[in-house]
Length: 300
Image (cartoon, rainbow, N blue to C red; front, side, top):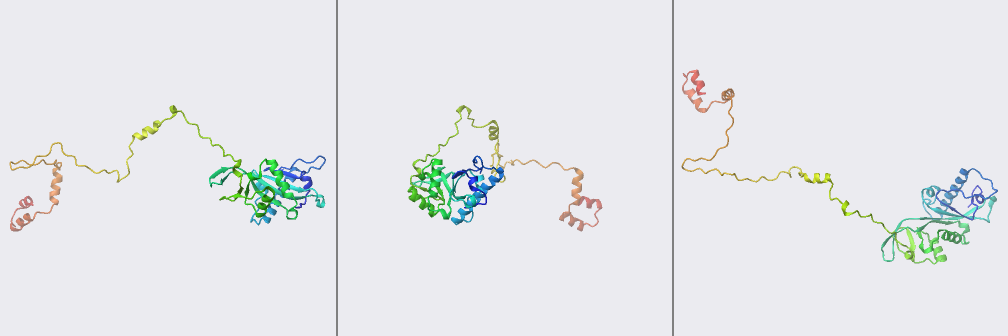
Protein backbone atom coordinates (compact mmCIF):
# COMPACT_ATOMS: atom_id res chain seq x y z
CA UNK A 1 0.00 0.00 0.00
CA UNK A 2 1.32 3.41 -0.98
CA UNK A 3 0.89 6.68 0.90
CA UNK A 4 1.51 10.33 -0.05
CA UNK A 5 4.23 10.70 2.62
CA UNK A 6 7.56 8.95 3.08
CA UNK A 7 6.77 5.62 4.69
CA UNK A 8 10.38 4.45 4.55
CA UNK A 9 11.53 7.41 6.63
CA UNK A 10 8.56 7.21 9.03
CA UNK A 11 9.05 3.48 9.76
CA UNK A 12 12.80 2.86 9.77
CA UNK A 13 12.58 -0.89 10.60
CA UNK A 14 11.19 -3.57 8.33
CA UNK A 15 8.69 -4.60 11.03
CA UNK A 16 7.46 -1.80 13.31
CA UNK A 17 5.63 -2.50 16.58
CA UNK A 18 2.96 0.00 17.63
CA UNK A 19 1.05 0.09 20.92
CA UNK A 20 -1.96 2.12 22.03
CA UNK A 21 0.05 5.36 22.16
CA UNK A 22 0.84 5.25 18.40
CA UNK A 23 4.12 7.02 18.95
CA UNK A 24 6.52 7.39 16.02
CA UNK A 25 9.58 5.14 16.34
CA UNK A 26 13.07 6.54 16.76
CA UNK A 27 14.34 8.07 13.53
CA UNK A 28 17.64 7.46 11.86
CA UNK A 29 20.40 10.00 12.48
CA UNK A 30 20.84 12.55 9.72
CA UNK A 31 17.19 12.58 8.59
CA UNK A 32 15.03 15.66 8.79
CA UNK A 33 12.58 15.69 11.66
CA UNK A 34 9.24 17.36 10.95
CA UNK A 35 6.78 18.29 13.66
CA UNK A 36 5.98 15.47 16.10
CA UNK A 37 2.25 15.96 15.63
CA UNK A 38 2.56 15.44 11.89
CA UNK A 39 4.40 12.12 12.42
CA UNK A 40 1.70 10.77 14.73
CA UNK A 41 -0.98 11.88 12.29
CA UNK A 42 0.78 9.96 9.51
CA UNK A 43 0.90 6.83 11.68
CA UNK A 44 -2.81 7.16 12.43
CA UNK A 45 -3.48 7.46 8.69
CA UNK A 46 -1.55 4.23 8.02
CA UNK A 47 -3.48 2.38 10.74
CA UNK A 48 -6.86 3.57 9.43
CA UNK A 49 -6.09 2.66 5.82
CA UNK A 50 -4.80 -0.77 6.76
CA UNK A 51 -7.95 -1.42 8.76
CA UNK A 52 -10.17 -0.45 5.84
CA UNK A 53 -8.21 -2.70 3.44
CA UNK A 54 -8.46 -5.65 5.85
CA UNK A 55 -12.22 -5.19 6.30
CA UNK A 56 -12.71 -5.05 2.55
CA UNK A 57 -10.68 -8.24 2.01
CA UNK A 58 -12.68 -10.10 4.70
CA UNK A 59 -16.04 -8.69 3.53
CA UNK A 60 -16.72 -7.05 6.89
CA UNK A 61 -19.35 -4.31 7.21
CA UNK A 62 -16.95 -2.04 9.16
CA UNK A 63 -13.22 -2.00 9.96
CA UNK A 64 -12.20 -3.71 13.19
CA UNK A 65 -8.82 -1.96 13.21
CA UNK A 66 -8.49 1.81 13.44
CA UNK A 67 -6.43 4.42 15.23
CA UNK A 68 -9.24 5.20 17.67
CA UNK A 69 -9.63 1.51 18.57
CA UNK A 70 -5.90 1.19 19.07
CA UNK A 71 -5.87 4.15 21.45
CA UNK A 72 -8.76 2.80 23.53
CA UNK A 73 -7.41 -0.79 23.84
CA UNK A 74 -4.15 -2.38 24.85
CA UNK A 75 -3.51 -4.00 21.49
CA UNK A 76 -0.20 -4.36 19.69
CA UNK A 77 0.13 -3.90 15.95
CA UNK A 78 2.97 -5.32 13.84
CA UNK A 79 3.38 -3.44 10.54
CA UNK A 80 5.51 -4.91 7.74
CA UNK A 81 6.90 -2.57 5.08
CA UNK A 82 8.43 -3.35 1.69
CA UNK A 83 12.05 -2.22 1.56
CA UNK A 84 12.59 -3.19 -2.09
CA UNK A 85 9.68 -1.29 -3.65
CA UNK A 86 10.20 2.45 -3.53
CA UNK A 87 7.52 4.14 -5.60
CA UNK A 88 8.51 7.78 -5.90
CA UNK A 89 11.05 7.16 -3.13
CA UNK A 90 8.35 6.91 -0.44
CA UNK A 91 8.18 3.19 0.32
CA UNK A 92 5.08 0.95 0.76
CA UNK A 93 3.28 -1.15 3.39
CA UNK A 94 2.95 -4.93 2.89
CA UNK A 95 0.53 -5.80 5.71
CA UNK A 96 -0.03 -5.92 9.46
CA UNK A 97 -0.88 -8.24 12.33
CA UNK A 98 -2.82 -7.09 15.42
CA UNK A 99 -2.76 -9.08 18.69
CA UNK A 100 -3.93 -8.52 22.26
CA UNK A 101 -4.72 -10.33 25.51
CA UNK A 102 -8.39 -10.96 26.32
CA UNK A 103 -10.26 -12.71 29.11
CA UNK A 104 -12.29 -15.56 27.60
CA UNK A 105 -14.51 -18.40 28.74
CA UNK A 106 -13.62 -21.39 26.57
CA UNK A 107 -14.59 -25.05 26.56
CA UNK A 108 -12.04 -27.82 26.85
CA UNK A 109 -12.24 -31.37 25.49
CA UNK A 110 -14.61 -32.35 28.32
CA UNK A 111 -16.88 -29.38 27.57
CA UNK A 112 -15.97 -27.71 30.86
CA UNK A 113 -15.82 -23.92 31.07
CA UNK A 114 -12.42 -22.38 31.68
CA UNK A 115 -11.60 -18.74 32.35
CA UNK A 116 -8.34 -17.91 30.54
CA UNK A 117 -6.55 -14.83 29.22
CA UNK A 118 -4.59 -15.90 26.13
CA UNK A 119 -2.94 -13.89 23.42
CA UNK A 120 -5.50 -13.45 20.64
CA UNK A 121 -5.08 -12.87 16.91
CA UNK A 122 -7.46 -9.98 16.29
CA UNK A 123 -6.68 -8.94 12.70
CA UNK A 124 -4.28 -10.15 9.99
CA UNK A 125 -3.86 -8.72 6.52
CA UNK A 126 -1.37 -8.97 3.65
CA UNK A 127 -1.86 -6.93 0.51
CA UNK A 128 -3.44 -8.94 -2.30
CA UNK A 129 -0.55 -8.25 -4.71
CA UNK A 130 2.05 -9.56 -2.23
CA UNK A 131 0.37 -12.72 -0.92
CA UNK A 132 2.10 -16.14 -1.17
CA UNK A 133 5.53 -14.53 -1.10
CA UNK A 134 6.42 -15.50 2.48
CA UNK A 135 5.53 -12.09 3.94
CA UNK A 136 2.73 -13.47 6.11
CA UNK A 137 4.93 -16.16 7.62
CA UNK A 138 7.72 -13.64 8.25
CA UNK A 139 5.33 -11.29 10.05
CA UNK A 140 3.68 -14.09 12.04
CA UNK A 141 6.99 -15.62 13.09
CA UNK A 142 8.30 -12.25 14.26
CA UNK A 143 5.23 -11.84 16.43
CA UNK A 144 5.64 -15.31 18.01
CA UNK A 145 9.24 -14.57 18.92
CA UNK A 146 8.42 -11.12 20.26
CA UNK A 147 5.49 -12.32 22.38
CA UNK A 148 7.19 -15.62 23.37
CA UNK A 149 4.19 -17.85 22.65
CA UNK A 150 3.59 -21.04 20.71
CA UNK A 151 1.08 -21.19 17.84
CA UNK A 152 -1.23 -23.65 19.66
CA UNK A 153 -1.48 -21.25 22.61
CA UNK A 154 -3.19 -18.58 20.50
CA UNK A 155 -6.90 -17.83 20.24
CA UNK A 156 -8.09 -16.48 16.88
CA UNK A 157 -11.02 -14.12 16.61
CA UNK A 158 -13.31 -14.97 13.65
CA UNK A 159 -10.58 -16.50 11.44
CA UNK A 160 -11.16 -16.56 7.71
CA UNK A 161 -10.63 -19.66 5.60
CA UNK A 162 -7.36 -18.21 4.30
CA UNK A 163 -6.06 -17.77 7.84
CA UNK A 164 -7.08 -21.30 8.83
CA UNK A 165 -5.26 -22.71 5.78
CA UNK A 166 -2.24 -20.54 6.61
CA UNK A 167 -2.07 -21.93 10.18
CA UNK A 168 -2.51 -25.48 8.95
CA UNK A 169 0.18 -25.15 6.31
CA UNK A 170 2.90 -23.47 8.38
CA UNK A 171 2.15 -24.59 11.96
CA UNK A 172 0.15 -27.86 11.55
CA UNK A 173 -2.86 -26.40 13.40
CA UNK A 174 -5.80 -28.42 12.13
CA UNK A 175 -7.90 -29.93 14.95
CA UNK A 176 -9.99 -27.28 16.67
CA UNK A 177 -11.85 -27.41 20.00
CA UNK A 178 -15.50 -26.40 19.43
CA UNK A 179 -16.54 -23.19 21.16
CA UNK A 180 -19.75 -21.26 21.65
CA UNK A 181 -18.14 -17.86 20.98
CA UNK A 182 -16.40 -16.43 17.91
CA UNK A 183 -12.90 -17.49 18.99
CA UNK A 184 -11.15 -20.57 17.64
CA UNK A 185 -8.59 -22.57 19.62
CA UNK A 186 -6.67 -25.63 18.54
CA UNK A 187 -5.76 -28.94 20.14
CA UNK A 188 -3.04 -28.45 22.74
CA UNK A 189 -4.35 -25.06 23.85
CA UNK A 190 -4.84 -26.26 27.44
CA UNK A 191 -1.47 -27.98 27.67
CA UNK A 192 0.20 -24.91 29.18
CA UNK A 193 -2.83 -23.05 30.53
CA UNK A 194 -2.89 -22.60 34.29
CA UNK A 195 -6.06 -21.11 35.76
CA UNK A 196 -5.32 -18.13 38.02
CA UNK A 197 -5.56 -18.83 41.72
CA UNK A 198 -8.51 -17.05 43.29
CA UNK A 199 -7.75 -15.45 46.63
CA UNK A 200 -10.44 -15.87 49.26
CA UNK A 201 -11.08 -13.01 51.72
CA UNK A 202 -9.28 -13.54 55.06
CA UNK A 203 -11.42 -14.94 57.85
CA UNK A 204 -12.00 -12.78 60.90
CA UNK A 205 -11.13 -13.99 64.38
CA UNK A 206 -13.95 -15.48 66.40
CA UNK A 207 -13.63 -12.76 69.01
CA UNK A 208 -14.39 -10.09 66.43
CA UNK A 209 -17.59 -11.74 65.24
CA UNK A 210 -20.68 -10.10 66.70
CA UNK A 211 -24.10 -11.61 66.10
CA UNK A 212 -25.92 -8.28 66.25
CA UNK A 213 -25.03 -4.70 66.88
CA UNK A 214 -26.65 -2.67 69.66
CA UNK A 215 -29.05 -1.07 67.21
CA UNK A 216 -30.00 -4.49 65.85
CA UNK A 217 -30.75 -5.77 69.35
CA UNK A 218 -33.05 -2.81 70.09
CA UNK A 219 -34.80 -3.36 66.80
CA UNK A 220 -35.38 -7.03 67.50
CA UNK A 221 -36.98 -6.20 70.85
CA UNK A 222 -39.76 -4.21 69.20
CA UNK A 223 -42.50 -6.42 67.81
CA UNK A 224 -43.53 -5.23 64.41
CA UNK A 225 -47.31 -5.18 64.07
CA UNK A 226 -48.70 -6.52 60.78
CA UNK A 227 -50.94 -4.22 58.71
CA UNK A 228 -54.73 -4.10 59.07
CA UNK A 229 -56.78 -6.33 58.95
CA UNK A 230 -54.15 -8.95 59.79
CA UNK A 231 -53.51 -7.25 63.13
CA UNK A 232 -57.11 -7.85 64.33
CA UNK A 233 -56.83 -11.05 66.31
CA UNK A 234 -60.07 -12.93 67.04
CA UNK A 235 -61.52 -11.99 70.39
CA UNK A 236 -61.86 -14.76 72.89
CA UNK A 237 -64.68 -14.77 75.38
CA UNK A 238 -63.15 -14.52 78.82
CA UNK A 239 -65.24 -16.19 81.49
CA UNK A 240 -66.26 -13.82 84.33
CA UNK A 241 -64.59 -14.22 87.68
CA UNK A 242 -67.96 -14.65 89.42
CA UNK A 243 -70.68 -16.12 87.18
CA UNK A 244 -74.06 -14.38 87.60
CA UNK A 245 -76.57 -16.31 89.64
CA UNK A 246 -79.44 -17.86 87.78
CA UNK A 247 -82.95 -16.52 88.28
CA UNK A 248 -85.18 -18.71 90.40
CA UNK A 249 -88.69 -18.76 91.76
CA UNK A 250 -87.45 -17.21 95.03
CA UNK A 251 -87.26 -13.79 93.44
CA UNK A 252 -83.55 -13.66 92.57
CA UNK A 253 -82.78 -11.84 89.33
CA UNK A 254 -79.59 -11.63 87.27
CA UNK A 255 -77.30 -8.68 87.68
CA UNK A 256 -78.02 -5.74 85.45
CA UNK A 257 -75.60 -3.42 83.71
CA UNK A 258 -74.96 0.13 84.84
CA UNK A 259 -77.75 2.63 84.27
CA UNK A 260 -77.44 5.57 81.96
CA UNK A 261 -76.34 8.85 83.53
CA UNK A 262 -79.10 11.16 84.77
CA UNK A 263 -80.43 13.68 82.25
CA UNK A 264 -80.91 17.27 83.45
CA UNK A 265 -84.52 18.29 84.20
CA UNK A 266 -84.70 21.05 81.60
CA UNK A 267 -83.51 18.74 78.85
CA UNK A 268 -85.92 16.02 79.95
CA UNK A 269 -88.89 18.41 79.85
CA UNK A 270 -87.83 19.68 76.43
CA UNK A 271 -87.69 16.16 75.05
CA UNK A 272 -91.07 15.33 76.56
CA UNK A 273 -92.69 18.31 74.91
CA UNK A 274 -91.36 17.28 71.55
CA UNK A 275 -92.59 13.71 71.88
CA UNK A 276 -95.92 12.96 70.13
CA UNK A 277 -98.86 12.24 72.46
CA UNK A 278 -99.69 8.69 73.33
CA UNK A 279 -102.73 7.16 71.59
CA UNK A 280 -104.47 6.75 74.99
CA UNK A 281 -104.04 10.44 75.73
CA UNK A 282 -105.55 11.31 72.38
CA UNK A 283 -108.55 9.14 73.21
CA UNK A 284 -109.07 10.84 76.59
CA UNK A 285 -108.88 14.30 75.08
CA UNK A 286 -111.40 13.34 72.44
CA UNK A 287 -113.94 11.92 74.98
CA UNK A 288 -113.53 14.75 77.53
CA UNK A 289 -113.86 17.99 75.65
CA UNK A 290 -114.44 19.99 78.83
CA UNK A 291 -111.19 19.15 80.39
CA UNK A 292 -109.13 21.99 81.67
CA UNK A 293 -105.91 23.01 79.89
CA UNK A 294 -103.98 22.02 82.96
CA UNK A 295 -105.46 18.56 82.83
CA UNK A 296 -104.69 18.38 79.11
CA UNK A 297 -101.12 19.34 79.71
CA UNK A 298 -100.91 16.89 82.58
CA UNK A 299 -102.39 14.15 80.42
CA UNK A 300 -100.20 15.04 77.48
